[in-house]
Length: 475
Image 1: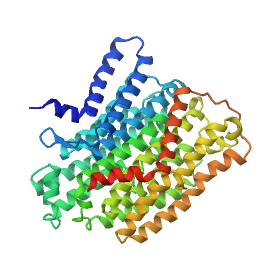
Image 2: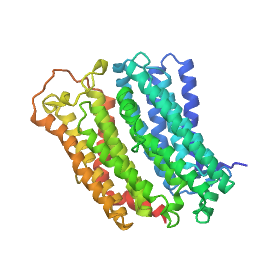
Image 3: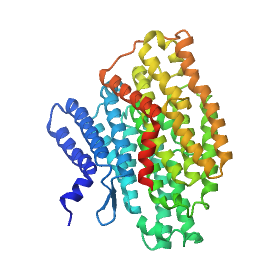
Image 4: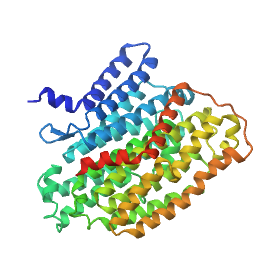
């Protein structure tokens, strides 16, 4: 029987679930749903994020060992919900400009967050699968929200086909793991991990699981959907894909393979993880240089950042896990801010999306130029911003795991990526404008970007606070 205490521990999940049902009712019965749903969604996400932090020390296991609550799980809840609150603020004016306001937009946004939360909280492979499908189906529809645009249709179809393909790997992996362990309980898998480290069936299942999620985190060579989907989807949704979707996939990997970070079993998969990390970092950084569309540039940048985070998985130690979680938190606010500025600069009919459009932006809008410069510096890993410390922690974890060569490749990749990030700063401040367009300012979008930049600066000024909090739950 579920007690009140049990329900309180999973209150963030309940808030989002109840919010989805209420949003459907509002959309059906209210003629003012277009004005109500955005702020209702923002309130839901904000409330859930605040409560997740408030109850972070209330660690428990619910629903007959199916769901975790508290600790690292609540930290992921905060990342998902605060990130989605920012996406909601960015979407209010953007959807009107994009010509794609549909009532189901905010309902799908809430549903995708519910899926992310289930993935992070899972203690059973089927809960991971349930969360993955809830999130993915919502993403497929959101990518093609404006069905009148061919680019949106293409983005949605590519995402759906390759996403379904990736899910097949994951499901087949579950089948093999079940065949070896005779259970889908993550606790049982962890308990038997050392004994099954020589079982080909089990190792094959784990490998297929990793391959399936390599698609979701956009790691090379499973990245082929990323540039087209990010470019074709609404800019605010691309922001969600690159942050919340990536964070949810990493949370699932760390939940299922938690035993790898306690000292047993990590050696078998370090070669695979190190190789895809190296390829992702170098491929993403090098190909991004050639891009002329800023959304495609940020898409290839996302591939490189996935590679940096996989460095922490390759290390297979507690510092690597802490570094990944810190990196995900920092990257969420950095990328949301960067995409937020892009969504404001973007004109009707997807204009002003070329990198040259940002020439002379400082003269048109000094505030947006300054904010975008901060996000670019942080993505490049320049101190004292949050992006620097994200890379620092994962690289140090690799050095401590005797993978110094991988950390060196990461530093080289960061040096390469600095070129295309700083190129935008140079264009904004040192080049004359090449096109004359008016920036339509939005108070809600500006608020979202300011919140993002405050988190970026805060995590850069006091990174130890978050790292200490994370490590306290990993002991």
